[in-house]
Image 1 (cartoon, one colour):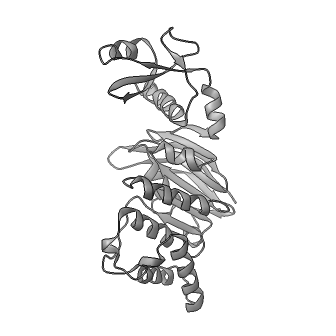
Image 2: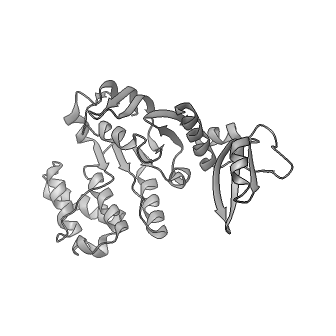
Image 3: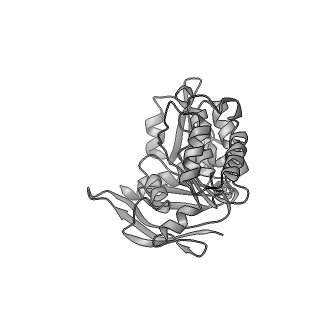
Length: 294
């Protein structure tokens, strides 16, 4: 069962064009949606989750018309938004019990069995009776995904799930998502390239509400092989390099700027060829987006 999105557009009353003709086919497994803050990712996720209507376009999940069969889609949907609230005085057990009833799990035995399994899957068994007000950000995110997984959904959407997590919690959460994504459609919306590189066999890049790239990471990397060049430079030289060459990214390493340049051949003897990363792919297409908007 795949998710098919065709020509989706959305313009808000203030004139912001959040989506501009987005078309995507998302298969079973982990799918990464990369883009900066304000790119339109959350608008797209909320639209898929039936929380807002687009101006034009269609969304189908298997045989379901998502825009006209919202109730049926919600029966198979698990959604972890970027921000969500939890009752601080309640325990994970009590919160999951509450949401399980709301999701229609009325058989008490089945409900408790599913809650027990989710607490184990999210590594929250030891704190299942503690108030969530004292939880870390990572623990709250794991509880959020447990809520999203109630009812065994076939489509799971997670919006910026690792933002603000420490490295240990981030890896624990990514491992959890990897387990979930084996036999359902999981959309991971993020601006963190590493998350997509670690998890997703398919991904897309969105910028300014437009689709900039969609495909498999290895295919994306292949398009840049032999065209990414690295140079350690100085702050004084950096403006001239940015003017003369297509610098796709700059970072500081031990206090010195290191640039990655897109060029079909060596820009100069001081440049070294480097194997492209998914981060290079991302900045390359984001650079295309910026150039087109000028």
